[in-house]
Image (tube, rainbow over the protein chains, first blue to last red):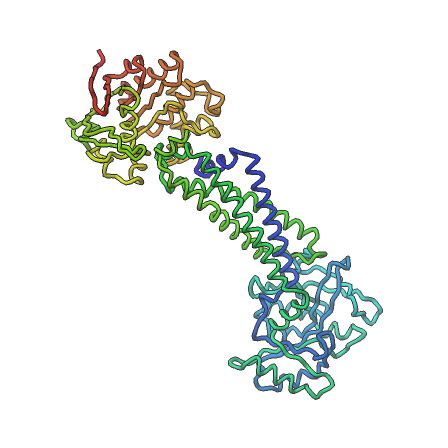
Length: 380
Length: 233
């Protein structure tokens, strides 16, 4: 037997109560896992940059811009690097399994936001090997179960090929990780020359230019200057930072992140109260035994460790079950619902499990610690 | 280390009072007591005479209001709670009237509890538990839960738990108070064995004159002081 065994056996003294607690914790972490996976799968604003500028048509982001505009943008001395992107949307197997493709010049993409995407020269070399090669983001690759070297087919919604087919076949040349956990990697990068040559409509146009200002240059001022440059052209532009662009896009629907955080926060606060209440009762029920343990030589800290161990055990089991269910749901229905359950979600969830396990145990443990032995013995 | 001629336990001028209903009720007003190492002392007396209070102070779970209380080299009257907990873990075992075993633990796990506080490996703990369970005649019952054991068997588990850390001092609070005569005699024989063969110093609070016959000497406590001492023949 170990200290942990003792805590575990204490937790199982009232099996029904412990199972109900674990179920409530599992449900809370299932909600957390699903909502966090949903945010991962649908949003990348948290990882978006304030420095990168996106130049789109002022008439709407779905309106194309001529690729020829690139040279006018790069002519501005405050532009450090620029690239372009044509977007394709399609699906894999079923229409709900939506996949986004950014067709770009890999070299320019590397120069302009290779750091944010986690692109490496090896990846750029790999995609350069053949025109149908693609680089796939980690979140997308995990969700679809794709690996390097695999051939994949994306059926485009509205970008037919010259041969009349809407099926675009690619070979995965590599997987990019993103600069950090918040970077949106739920998309793939294809070669613009391949997509542009094969598509029927929109040849030599792009959906956006991506611009990196020189160091020390105000992104806002450069954005205004670029828009001025095209204000009297056939295709006026609207230039925003990547973060502004994504946040504005998501706000069209609602502040999803805030709603999700409120829901999950409410679930966790409720959970905190339920578990604290239950554990405080458990301490009261065991007051006499706490006296016995202290008489045997268990110190106040030993008693604290015992109760913290018990709440941690309940949280780890309950939370583990909830996260496993969330992972299962993301695996089974992820592509359809836009759920991406990957490592950062798990790590954050484990941190929350540890924090809640300790937080809920602190008050009961503190109560147990303070009980004088003589008082404990009077309770029987 | 105490000198050979120094008593193992020495209480000097112990004062203790409890506040009951706003009034201070004195229990001890200057109690003196010395007990040599290896003694087996029965403490008897009517309810309210201070037997339990004395035992609680010797166990370091209650502190005197005044006076000195030394056991071995440890001055319990000067120690804080954490130090007294550490002292209990290494120097003292206690046997309760109602056994006070944890119901969700097996006999072996109950006995192992004090060893969790010692830097021993799992194997060392297991060997020690097996040894003391064998000593109290409970070999083969390691995995039995207290609820399935008789009172006498539970008390033997309680004794095994008290001695598993090999403490020098064994405090017994009415150890036979909840047992029939046969079981009581078995438990008392066990205590006598621990005293005679393993040289444990035992202080046993009891109401039972039969139980007191097993001790080397009997102290009668009344109104906070010892009024009589009998030595075993």
